[in-house]
Image 1 (cartoon, rainbow, N blue to C red):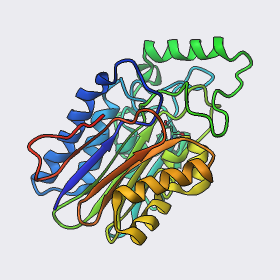
Image 2: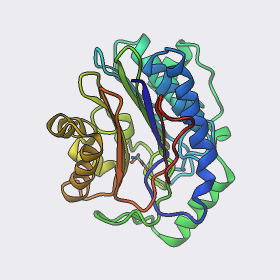
Image 3: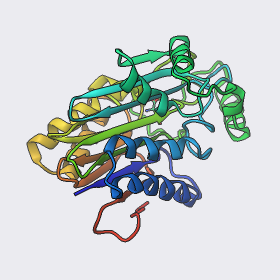
Length: 303
Ligand code: ASP
């Protein structure tokens, strides 16, 4: 049974969580349109993530958070679970849709992960439209960086290990889906963490950490403290829990415990299993999620 679940990033509670609702609904619908038409899970997760990259309320594509230098550097990864095909990009700033560049790495290159200049050169060779990095920067993110600089003179990290991501807003995006052919796919895209050091690459670019899919088990997309997620290889570990317990919600919850206790960080994740059942969990106050299955008339958006 086809299904898709999408997240809009783990973070602190915001006064108006409803601001994420139209974007989440549009992303679930974009992915579901692919699945309902008999299309591939890989195309569905790419479509869902692209739609959130195009929505500047989310920390991906235009609207991504800024580095400590005031620039945009984005990470993205995508995986197809039949043959464990994967593609990823790190620290890219010249494409509006990093997830589509990651997809091209999967489809058209012999590599899994390309970063920075090499990724831009590959994008050009692949014929993807190049964008001016300045066009990805929004006024809102400029203001957030200025506020952060004012609050943390000397740029001391705002997140202490084990801290509650209190200064971190939701906004990283991801999706995982099962299609009619039994294939599972997952995708994640982000601008990373506000005020990060240029050159920092997080979990969202790393297969097994931010993203994983195996059609015999399920698919996962993670969000949260990237360094902590990397430490525990969260996405792959979540599928091991799923294998043990055969319960996506339980697997998601135990994975968040792992992130908090062993990873010493905060965050969340979404899971779809090989039967199309979905699960999610987060340790932060807010993580926008939405999903769609054949039994629902319209996307569920329980946040
Ligand atoms: N995991 C992302 C990163 O560390 C950020 C996030 O999900 O909010 O790059």
